Length: 454
Ligand code: S3P
Image (cartoon, rainbow, N blue to C red; front, top):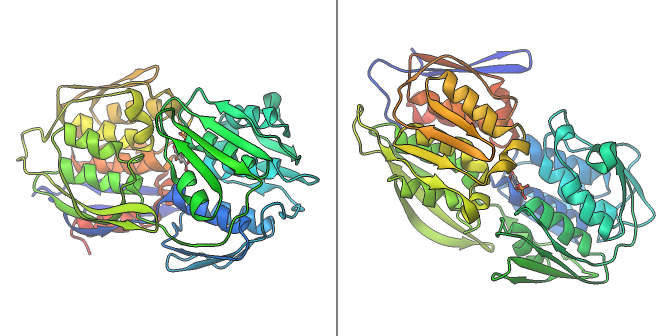
């Protein structure tokens, strides 16, 4: 009897995971898809640059596909997407064409928020942007307000708080924006808008969020400085970007599912190759190691301006004993593992003691309300999880029993529940599992591979 099966009915997939009588140990070497954040940025900067950008290792998930579609409509020539090599012929900053139709960001907050900074700073052109049902509920004022301070003209439901949005491009002026939230999407949106504003545009954030935009803008030739003390980044406009070769490392947010799987399933030994280990993203490694997970970084190297390593995870404990111990996660660590909190909640179920996650209210406005989704679905499986206004409290050590659970159409919820199911007795059905393709199209195949079915 196979452990992992995928039932595809119409557009909805149900992922079924059945615990074998003999137990399960996960073994093997895994290659994960390209980093989602870096993939978006390479397509966008490639489109805005003069000359050709060559992207190796692009994520072929639905989110980067949305970005590619939008920037094709804005005038960039982007070859067919594949993970080997994508060629982008840029049109140069300021030269975007006015599309004849609405730009659709699909499920991707990064596409919509970063693109807004670019569109708002292109004078004499009108743009309309939208997204799917989830994205149309997500807050846009966090980028619309600072852009308006720069002189942008943007309209939308609730004073521009919700997509669909209409943008009349303007010549923007630089600002120093002090953001109340640590958000790479907010920071990147303003820095991208600042590329065309004459003078210095600065963003200061309360804690450092991922810095891929800063690294890549510099590599493409923008004048950009950072101040690590104050968590500030400054770009000087008008900028001139030149096409580059970008090598996209594996996404640590996708690796996180295998790291937790390897840490909680007794007898496991997994190596995840070619993972981006940018320090603004490695909070998950620190959190899991503080919980006692056996994770080692092998073969550390630098690939095109981003640090990369292979990650080996082993679970040395026996079935019957808890493999991890509880921890508290809060403060400046949160932006460094914001997308990994759903899978970290799964790890906490298999940790001795009570894990508390705080300062993570942002999770309520991701692709779903991830606090509510994880508490509800893990409790269905038998865990003891309470919602906090800004996080979760998880009492570890209750056994999980397979049942019916739902992804809330959120990719990270779907994959987190699949990993929880590996340690649940009986059979778990994860409904609307197709959401995984947003960031991880081959998730099910890799799951089958490490369960020994390929
Ligand atoms: C992202 C930033 C994060 C993250 C998202 C991708 C990015 O969002 O959750 O998946 O690529 O800039 P916030 O910056 O809004 O926290």
